[in-house]
Image (cartoon, rainbow over all chains, first blue to last red; front, side):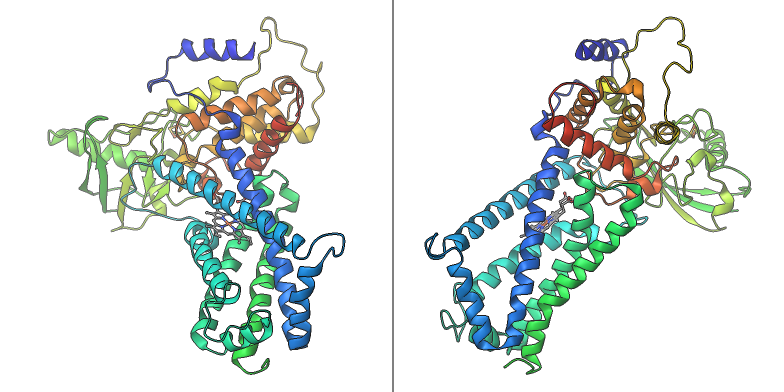
Length: 242
Length: 252
Ligand code: HEM
Ligand code: FES
């Protein structure tokens, strides 16, 4: 019924450009962006838990290594050893793959949507964080690979499997490593600042009366996560943790 | 006032196009930006050149025909103002201004600063209406509309379809325009029967026309001459998610 009317309305005033096939709902930019947001939330919850876990470093080697071991034993004896850890890894890998795959696709579509660039580009109010989601996201991807090589896969000059504390301390003692981690945390903070607010907007949860609070909440979260992660490498570098 | 203008000149859709420099002399600060261009065009015509083509109609900020980029900002530096309502007193003597048409694949340039915005009409045709039987006007108070809803609908209905949102968006997204229409009809009782189908059809058509996606950067709302807000986009996103999850064509 509605479709019929749409057709008559369209034929009454023929458009200048040729007909375009509509993109079906699951393929729309809005639906895809909502998946980006949901996978982003998985990431946000993960980095928050990860950051809090890292703070065990301040309690000393026994507690941090014990925490690392504990993560492998959750659910025992009901679940086999490391089962939950592997489930978490698979969920995260899937989430990151969807997140990056869809954002890459959307970014390419958007680039094609403006075939001719402006001679004089301008920005009225967009934040630095919002304009660097793509490059910042790519930097995060690079960092994730570096970080896994460094502290999970053991591409590290003094790596001892299972001794998380030793690996972290001997790694962060070298300032170039700490510098990479700090730069990555700045990128993460920026990504989270725009990303967290954006999730509320993309999923349609935001309301005008909540907007300021959500902006402040996103800023607070970005600062807590970014600074929280940074405390450990900095503490090692200045010999507070050794 | 004297100004240096770098203006995009393009003879027709297939032409390459290029920036051409003009000197605008003897401009009164009380002129509107379009009147300033009228003066430049008079000079061009007297010199035997083609005048700079730009769209306009009402020249009072209500029709949505005018609009182009001034130094990278849609409708120029004043907030909540169309170029026809932008006065030269907001510029300084000696300013250099780059004037370009809206840039989007879905808005092909027709000539100089004029773009074809019929892609917007096609988004409207996909669902931006209410299929009410026409005939004699219904009694105005038959359907009670809460004041708050009437206000939201009115704010969204202020959209004049000028295209500045698309032009300002780094992704050339038409989300603010589409969202304004979705809110305008979606908050009113008369808009409920078709609410779910409307948002789906409009978004599907918007994407099919080759507009980009929304990254919630907010440049669209910042340049909107009618100050349509980002909250309309959240409303559209919410309605689309509900239309995917809930069945039936009714209230989302
Ligand atoms: C691993 C590499 C990553 C890449 C390449 C990446 C890329 C992106 C891009 C390009 C966007 C913008 C999407 C758009 O607006 O169209 C985005 C949004 C987002 N990202 Fe990431 N990201 C990455 C990692 C992460 C991580 C680790 C987190 C969580 C801590 C995260 C959380 C988010 C959130 C919450 C959004 C907002 C979604 C929305 O706008 O609704 N991302 N990401
Ligand atoms: S000419 Fe009508 S809005 Fe500018």
